[in-house]
Length: 413
Image (tube, rainbow, N blue to C red; front, side):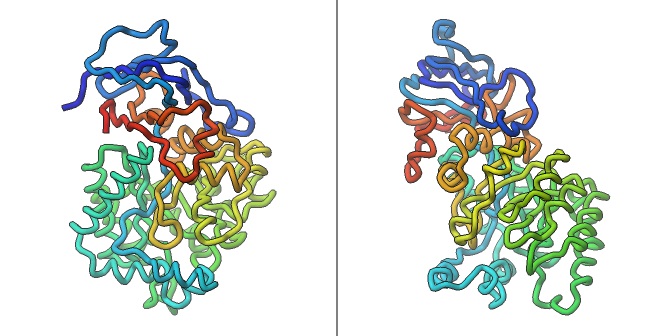
């Protein structure tokens, strides 16, 4: 039973405060993070009720937590994952160690196609149970909202199976979940010589069924070298728009693909990966409401170059951070490690990385009005850290779980 009220007292630093609705944090604003030292936070009926200095702290609540020495901040919002999958791909991990590239593994039938084969045999209950274990895992690492993609089906039956599982997760998970239809993740082998037929299957059969059964919030395409072209992406996104599915697309992970521009053209909520981002791509994003979302743990695991976060931020862009949790290119949903990588390899200040993983991540899932900051009336999905003196210690301790307690909808998890 949920506590009616929860009071967190003696907070060393309460960070991520936004008193009023704010736009996506961009440029210099990304480095600004409002903080109250020696603070309290009062939660009532699962939502943030009030906060301030300890001298103004209420005396009573149904439950009281003493956070002496801890930092308290909004939970991470992980806006890009693939956590419904049937099996791990550790043999491909060995291939990578031996020197094979992501593209070479894919050409040998590995990668996405490998998982798609196993998806055919996977039972829905198994997919649901294993994904719920991953949900529990990421919550304990600080995540309080998540997006989950399909894309390992690559057939009508298997894509729908994945989306049904994601719908079950949305209903069962203690944190908000957004569903993303990624039928255009890779080209199935049987359509190798008839690409247009697979795209027609997505548009004419998958999309109407998904819309009729309310199985997805977004539509996605892997617009990149060796996957789907700009023209194909444009066609699929426009078809999705007819069913009120907003785009959130993979772009420019493997090459300068034009994916960023086609995402902006179609008013994508976000364009994700962006390892190959130059001046033209930055200019396109500056003139849009699309959130550039960076996935540094993928670059880390695949030994790719990292997205030019510093150049993007210094050009006035806002960025979000996400984990890309999946079995092949980022087998981790640890957003703390993502934040560390952003600081170490992409030269993002701790404040920038934290904002990118909280309020900007919420924008990348259109959850900015309910999650992503310490704001009155927002859902109380909150991290209480172990004793920490400085927020720089969050990315600094790259191998440690800095979470002491998770508060989910006002209840200790």
